[in-house]
Length: 284
Image 1 (tube, rainbow, N blue to C red):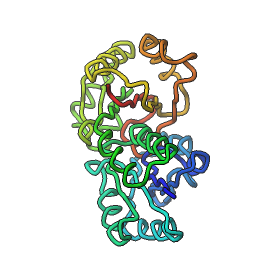
Image 2 (image 1 turned 60 degrees about the vertical axis):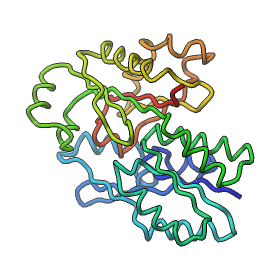
Image 3 (image 1 turned 120 degrees about the vertical axis):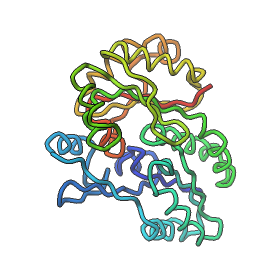
Image 4 (image 1 turned 90 degrees about the vertical axis):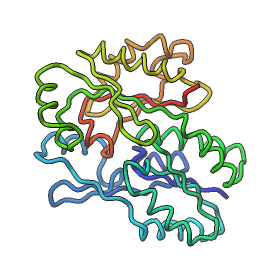
């Protein structure tokens, strides 16, 4: 049997993991003196409630080699194989710890550096589930994931520069200037790293910029998994994006509400803040 294990940077929480038939290992999130397990005893909604009331950004701890080893021992105890999917190695040391732990399991554990995060990591997991359902071996699933992962595009419109400034991702001067105007940065996770695609004034222009970048990537491969993501406690910005981008989706879904959409969790939400929207897909 092949088991699939993913970290909570994918924004797949414990309850959803059980429904999907995957294993999830949580990242630790610390607000002040309180430490939580992402997606276990800290929901995505609770995270954004705490983020809004916190003066400092929360801190996340990487999943160390010991925790990976514990999980691998349990999952391989019956002779099963394990496919592990982690957040990009350029964003966290989680992949390196998982890879080091896997060396002690005699080829039973295959570790994939997704080179993405959040909904980008999620759709790679969905692809792995599809391959497992087709009866592929662990080695063949690993090979397919490695060959396809670099086609994943993760693009997002961020509502404010405030959280990027707090996290040290941009300078205070740039953030101050941006916060004086309704500037909305469009960012991507490309080659495993967060990059600025462009900036626009207002939601409509930023949504247009997002759509232009989708086209530059070659468009969405609708035969592969895809997903939308939103941060914060409501879907207002997501609904606005769906209206602006209807032409992209309408010929591929029966109803716009059928497009898979998920709340973004702590790993990306810490730096994006509320009211960000994102799209993840395999480029044609």
